[in-house]
Length: 183
Image (cartoon, rainbow, N blue to C red; front, top):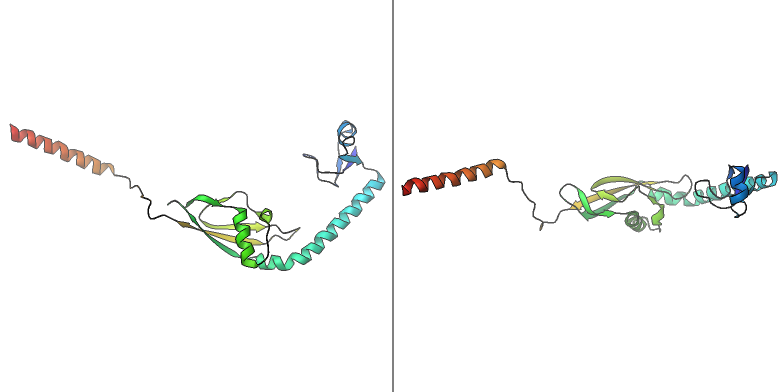
């Protein structure tokens, strides 16, 4: 049975989409709960009209935000964070940090939810980050993370086995010399 979803349904689809579902699922669950209606020709026209309105709205917003996208695209944001000697940060650089610094750099407010990173940045170096404004407008920024190593931290130097062996041999030789001197 074809239905038009009236609200987002998990594992099925978004509001306004037309889906083909099992008859029992539609009759017993989706329609009684108000999540969907049967896809009649009249409903299909409403869906087509709503989709056209949605596309026009996105196109208008893309035109308005094109200037902002041009200012964002190619920006280079630099962060300094405490890091270990291997380049791994003690904390992380999150999408909120990136949005805050980007907003300051371009002079317009950027929502942290529009900054797309799979997971927080936890290593030093350059990272490419996408800002999802709307529709097809997805400018790229470069995030450069510089690691700061604290001078107070003592870096443990591995002691070589050869030095340990030499020290042990010297002690044994000293003990043998003492024993020989006593005898």
